[in-house]
Length: 495
Image 1 (cartoon, one colour):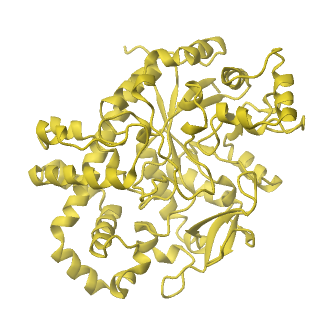
Image 2 (image 1 turned 135 degrees about the vertical axis):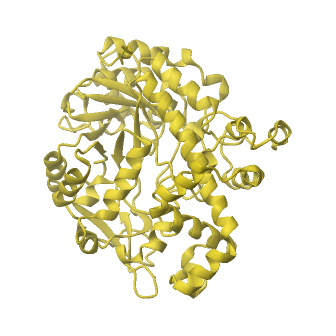
Image 3 (image 1 turned 30 degrees about the vertical axis):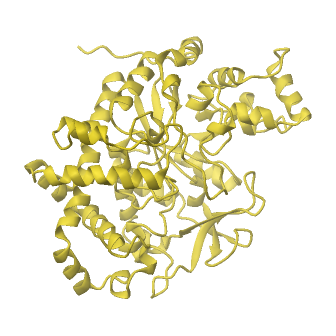
């Protein structure tokens, strides 16, 4: 396996004048920067529609793209917006994402653009090709608006329980609104396709992400309730989470509906296979979040206050991955195998042949057999300084006790206190075939730039890269390391 390196940066973190990163010029500049820095890959979190807190792991739909990532500038280039309309966009924070404000203001632009949009042959073909998920998604969006933004569990019973006559009448009455949401998906896919083509031209691999669960309030749970543990009135019986761990003493109560794996198995996991194929339309490789749930998952009785009193329930195991491989021909995945990992989970990971994840911030507990220590990391791994769920490495270093810092310094053996650059160098030097470093670490930013704090309900997923730091020269150090440690991407010359 060829050694490589890349950077994690979610698109919402790009600089832009519209309150959130988007698929405009910054996205193309980013790809060029990666190419110039000899990086082989760009990793990002799921690209689906998000709720007001902005978590990409609680998407409103597994198959849809996030409309907030649509570039208004690109809409202007298609004559769907005017210069005056772009210049009239209100000043929103540049250092973080205010999701409610961004949603409100960008929708105003999107409505204007839709008013000028012609129903082209390309749009009609898109709607026909994506009908298998698009029809339910657009209907879900329109119904949610009709219920003042309430989630589907709170909708009027005929809509919550998907009464055919009620849905047919609603479709007829709100046809234009359904087209509006289809338009947003068409534009998102068009803009993402351009970004992906630019990445391919640079030889930069895209590493996407697929959450193990879907959000309770999602088009998926509403349109396919038979796949989840719901009662006849669509109330959840058990929900997802993890027991107490590194991140939380009471566990993490995620609240997603858990799957009826016995039902999914009956058609060889067709819904999941379709979901994976969809993710691979957005990326070349997909990180499977919470991989351990395929071996066994933590299920908590619905209505519980925390995740402490759940139980481990068997997942679909190796049979699932065999079905996926038979359908798509390969397993282009990274297994997120962090947290409570048993021998059975390790065996499933090894039996599938998937690379697991190693995180340097987890390495220094004093145990020389710690699997995250660089000398214990196997080649078939992806090594990170930290992930989107960790503090930045600079922030983490500042929280260490004297004993912990002593272990870190002793391992590095540099004779001076550890700094962020030492950890990036250490990650590059490990045997792991792939190395990924969050941009915040490349820039040596502190805890104020942390992306997500698990277990904290508010204030996550908001970080944006300051424009002054979004420069190719800021990647000079990782460019040097990529060359030094045999991870430099060599661009293939076109014949």
